[in-house]
Length: 280
Image (cartoon, rainbow, N blue to C red; front, top):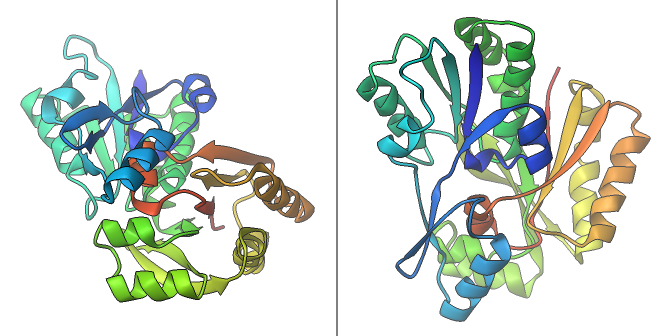
């Protein structure tokens, strides 16, 4: 049997996790010395409150080797395929590999560097879960995932630069002018790293739709199985407008909404929304 695991930055909903039988390995969120587990005992609203009260971005940390080992059964014949956030962003990938080595299970534990984040990972995880359900072996799943890793399109439009600034991801000047001019950057993931692509202006109902519509041609040529709307959180009216637009393209079998978890939210801040998919 092949079991699919992912660290918690995949931002999949509890229903998806249960429906696809996925194991989730939590990352850690530290608020002023108090440690929490992502998706277990902290919510984005909690960290936003703490961050605003203290003017700081929460610290996050990868799961430890022992944390990962607790998900592995050395006495079984099961194989494991484990997905992690991009190795350039976290030690999660390295710690998962160390766990496989420490447990002397390297022959049946396959750790995949997603080269992505949030549901950019989730898209790969669900594909792997479908392959596992179809009876594929661990190495067969790894080979299939390698074919789509570079095709995952993950981007987000940011409502406020405050959290990126607090986390050292943009200069104080950029944060000031972004706020003053109401600029909202589009952040994309490429080659395992985040980079700004474009800036939008205006209120959320405008800049979010401008961001989504800019992807229309790419969306029309996306893998039709599923597309994610992932946010941290956004006004439900705006989310529904995005859903309606994606539905109007008549392309996707599934349009899935998920909430960004505490690790991802701690860096992008509230009001962030992304549309994530796999290119054909």
